[in-house]
Length: 185
Image (tube, rainbow, N blue to C red; front, side):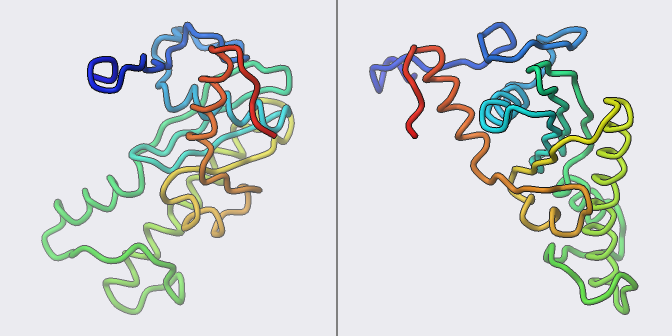
């Protein structure tokens, strides 16, 4: 469609393209293109040991070494999917706005759900990051991206920086890399 209607060839991100990373995954073809894009962008931007947390449909965690090795990561259900499952499968629970409640101990159903979702996901992030760093043998710079990063990241103790445009920056970086152009300063 891109070729027919816009006269351009789309960039298809795969594990086989030159991203500047060495993929240390058992089957690199299983790595989602979003994870590859985020890892390439983060490594290009920071050149250090990294853990990238992407709050998208799934909450993904990617570990990248200072030497550019993509080690792998973890995948958990996204916050939106988890909230939707709670609302559709529990008879008396209704949808609530994903917002920071005043207290962790909810005093009504809505604030109880908000506390469980927000602080529960913050705890999930901190626990997975801590375990990943233990396996890596050192601490890493932890960045977050994705639609809910700005909501969850402030509630964690592990996320050090929010990069809201990381995926778009990664697509630009990979396009320029594959077409032999340099990135703008």
